[in-house]
Length: 112
Image (cartoon, rainbow, N blue to C red; front, side, top):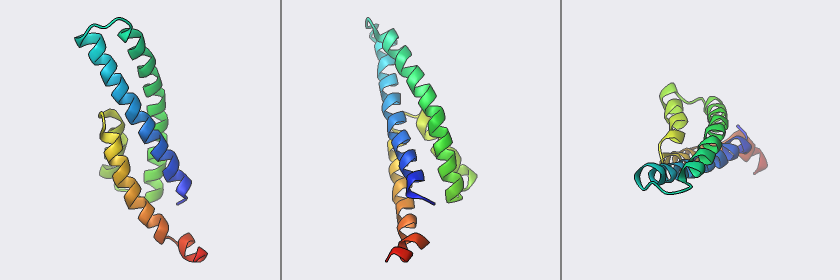
């Protein structure tokens, strides 16, 4: 597996996580605090999060299939983009796990 597969997953995990937090704050502003402009903010952020989440799903599925994850692990990673802040924790765990495998892989030994 190439490091670029992990990198693009990581980028989308962070972007999806940040947008989901912004969306949560926008919803609080819209429905709880009834702030002016919160509806427009929520609309824009929800559109961005929705489309980028689809891209996150594609990249996460690609990463999981190349890493040969079991179905449960794959589902957890896919769902992490729907739970505020979960994407950050799951991304960090996955990155540590796969960076070690990439470093120990056949390309690393060929370069040494």
